[in-house]
Image (cartoon, rainbow over all chains, first blue to last red; front, side, top):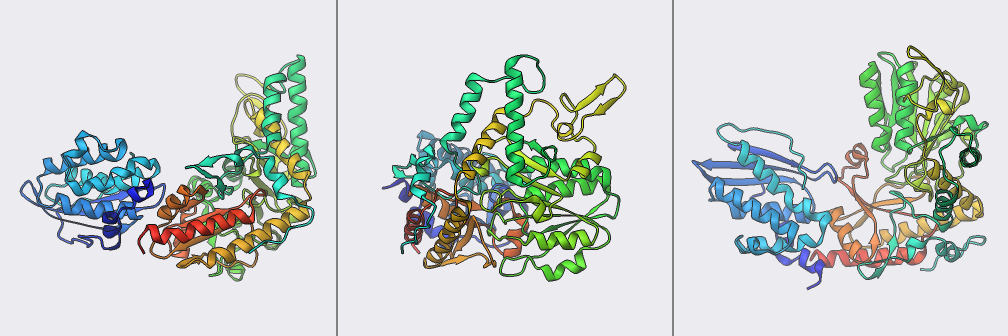
Length: 155
Length: 413
């Protein structure tokens, strides 16, 4: 497959066209903003917890196919996970999109492997990472009350 | 579609002067359509800088030794070349800066700090690049002045009807782009100059995008200040020009203090050199100024009228060709456009378009182009921008269009 085909593979295109969990969540326990000042891409991530577990997750925002599909797939994979499991997934995902398919990537849910091709496109790593950085912030900060904080991530 | 050959301008010969155009990207020939961000450099610029640095380099206006004297003479000659390029009356009106951004900040912090009082107004436009907006916001916050913005009409031209209400007795300065970096709109600067002057305001013209494409005559434009960048003008980075009317510069306090901008210094007090030295503290970008002069000389060696006709014909062709791609919408239809063309593709984010084009060797810029207020006005998050230099050809346009036609397939639309 060409590197372009590797980047824009069907799973990513599908989640771009029809993003899952794409909605606001008025009663979220935690909300984080992802914003990339270089390109203007922006998303809001909402989390609801059941004890230590992510009971529900959703997002809304504007961005390219990579950032939108990445946010959508992330929501499908972290639902039901504990904070610690989600944080570990963040680490593995981040390593995969910067270093390519490594051993750590193999521990990730298989669908997230769709983003391994991003490592070939350094300018697009920040797009794939946008939702995940918002997630980490929401995990760090989100406890009892919804919080909002502008988050300019750096990869 | 073939573009008629413009008599007096041989683009294939010009292309041979730019070594970077021979590059290959992802195994494809480079199609460079990002000159609005930064232009490629002709060999004469590289050679001029190399020869100066290799054989005749020294600091300027400092030493009595031979190299310093000759470096000073070359630096002064570069200023005279820039004066001629800008149509300034006096070389003392031309200051070497680090670029357009530095020039605007200089005027904001020197003229603005000395002049602006609470309630004074600075009028910008919705077309502005952040570099002609943020420096005014900063000085406004420091002085209590207010920044107001002239709107644009839906076609991407300035809404000059609205200027009557916005240009008031409180307006001290109108700061506007000569050419929009996003839409390529050519702004009727002379008309705005007359209106501004009639209202008692000064005019600063951001020429970053006009200097590479239009003949510049600061006096005919009615500009009190004019700024541009070397690197968009086929010259090096790190150097730009600020023109200021001599009576204004002579009355302005220094912005930065240091060596080379003084007359007499004691531990208590300093008297300052007249312009331009007053505004060139520290060692200036000497090799870069010499490189910029070489770029100006290169442009001066071309038939200006033929070049302008060629560029405008090619841009019109590009607009028609790109508009013919399914799902593409061209942003704005200004009365006159030079240098740049912005568009969006339905259902595809500009960054995805940019990435896909890049794999075909086609370099464009995608995003907000440092003009977020304009993006908001246009109702888009970003655009794809193809921007042109004197070395672009109809073949470049064909390559752009062919690559654009493939985008929707890659995105499975």
